[in-house]
Length: 180
Image (cartoon, rainbow, N blue to C red; front, side, top):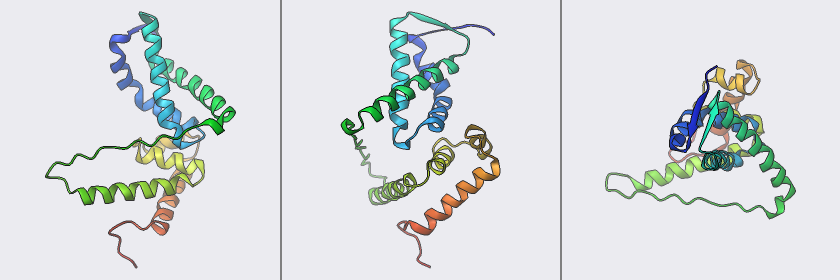
């Protein structure tokens, strides 16, 4: 296998080329879906710091190297998380809404509220269901890829996803739905 030299100058390229696989790895390995963003951020911060310390790295597989960092970050995160869980703080990211004239702000807010309502409901389900839902809708993986990543059969993966969708439709009232 050929060795690739990476440096801080091509960090953005490394990030773009490895992000989807690293995200998929973290989703499959995490214990709490709320932790995904923190773990991804910590992984790439550690890569950035490593590239800052060392002028360049000679790697056979950059993606495997970044996934190795993610694996260490997951171990470190959950070790610290469970050790100091009473000290953990939750931060809420407030997103700014672009108030340009051609956007229907009311529809945008309703859509965001509906998405938040669905996501809150989904997070309360079994972790395997949350992972399947996240990988399908957020990471946009195919059912066959999700099955492979989570060591499930495709039939089982479809069943989990479709049961989740049916459950959401049954239990969540979305703005604009027609009452039957």
